[in-house]
Length: 454
Image (tube, rainbow, N blue to C red; front, top):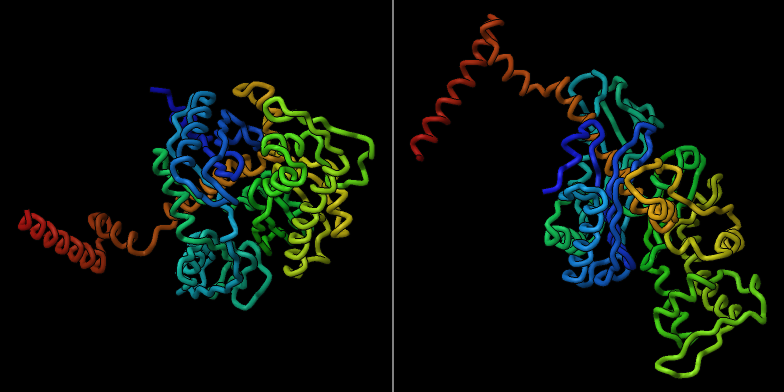
């Protein structure tokens, strides 16, 4: 059996991200390094044959791909993978705004437990049949009628209100993803919306404060997330991605699918005018047939037409969000589709908003666990979601630890009463004795009942 590094490195626990994409399934193993970056320990990849537009279409094929990617990551990292953080996307993803209110019994300072209570109340919202809440993201808090508070923890107050950005998805699609993970003998630690994961890998706090749009162009979907003043304001999933561009090339140039993918990756461009008229690609024929010549400019026209459609969808989401004029940091494009040449120029031409490519290398620490080629490959925009899942997994673990520490330091009243009763020999107040006797009597009744049942 492989030694588990998690038992050795308790202070920096190892996290596993599982990106179930339309074109690839990627497993990343890592932990937080001393420089507060992500130290990659292992990477496993497999072709995704059972996923269509971010939704599981074939469970058996998806499970096989997950096992293949996990096995590769285990061999490289020497870690026994059992628990994973999964990314989720797809056209079924929806988002709504809601407001919650919590009234405390005292004016003591607000703790993490109070915020968690308010968040947990949002999970009780009644949604349309067949939908389930994935994320409840607090935006701004109001403490005793004082609005615009972003960090309420530590403030004194009795009445706490908050605006929430609630993300939901289709129950069946969520269950199918979890079923694939279960069948692969893995356990789900957390389910993370993919644009949120990608944003952690390619955006910094300054951009989120200034106002920025993250556009993650994957194989089956294009994910959009808008941030302003450090808060997520709008999310959307567009059911178009790199695969539909490949399909357009296959039909437009009358070539095989794998040839179309190679044409897109090696010679593809989002702007036809940037290519020369006389530049030609020779594509081999099928089974001895004559080779075919394809104009690079015509190839670019096919790609440009589809990319314009995707960008128009993104621009519509930007305008409908109401933050079009507040995006000082502009647009950040990531994902596999971001590698197309001249895409930044096309986005700026259509939207009139500054644009850049988002690379996840800023958060990656140098590591001796991976070979140089694999480490350099992980800096590509197509692995932004995979790296982001690691970062989100670490953040979730740290938040849970902080909440646990607060519960330990400030125990709920029921726990305090029970402890007082157990320590009644040290505290001789009549109230303490009554409480202790009450608890003891109830325990004896429960024990007698239990013995009788046996």
